[in-house]
Image (cartoon, rainbow, N blue to C red; front, side):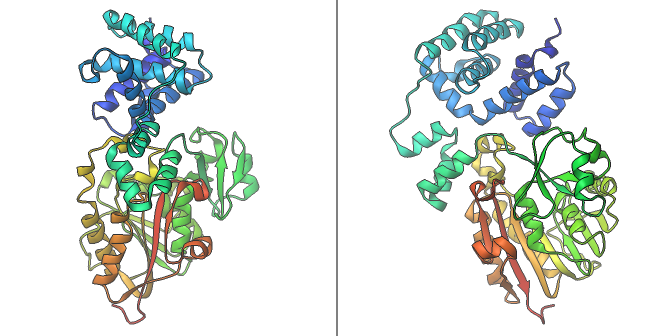
Length: 439
């Protein structure tokens, strides 16, 4: 039997790799599907189970703990992932009959060399069904949120401290589920009519975002328009970020942390392919992604090179516009990379200092009267408002500037964008301006 044509087998195998400390879930899944023998239907089932288990892992573990006579830590890792996948299908996938979820999980245990555990898998899953799929939720509001939204204590506590319990719960609720597929039409290469006719799915224009669309299908790289450079994939918030920079064909723009290049491409298109954008990233292999994307899109006003964003390069010119999209905890993008919430919070402790050093260096490149946008895909205040406040205190030649368009109308000079506002990722955008005499 070819195990690689069984969607659940592939999903559990990938889950075991991911939870063992593998790469990002989107990379793991893409590689796993490419190396499998699954048809399109199988790939959809595999993706749903894989992402679903990662997204709901703490909830699933809470349920399994209440049903198993053995502590989770004593369970074989593969068996635990089979149970997680089984409970997920029973509780969250209406398209999968309960009996099918149980039978396939038992079969999977045997297929993966865990025959001795197949009886336990069967008993736990059937017990959950007999209990009408109900499970106990802790009385503590914080612990209840942890179980309900599969969010660790540090994430619930941090968001509650920053925004209060009600908004924190909204953010955690919005972090569940798959995000829409959004793209930006390349206005330098095609008309709207040409773009729409190049798609193999429907597309809906995005309000507030020029040339932005939501697609009905997530498989974009195989579309005719992708190969022709008619569009690139980009979330709404990232498109709004580029519009906040507001580059024109007369600008010289610095994108100091640019890879993989999505914002660089959008700014180049906003400039009608004219002017000049310098795009940097620390690693040459990631700079290669920028060059390849620019070539596919036919954008010739981009110069991409490797460089450390914390170190000033006196050979670079001054810039009228600077985008400082710094490395961050990624809390706003949990829908895309749900494994982020299971990281050790200690991994994030040094980020505000790195972000400040990058922003401080980026500000040195501003021409007199030039404008800089500081952005992240997180909603942690210590990585956002606190960094901007420290930067303004350190640089008397910098001042807060009103964001353009809907962001300025709604937020002023800095915007903490919740997913519920525009249907986007969580994001932070702040605009700063150098004094006319700043050097």
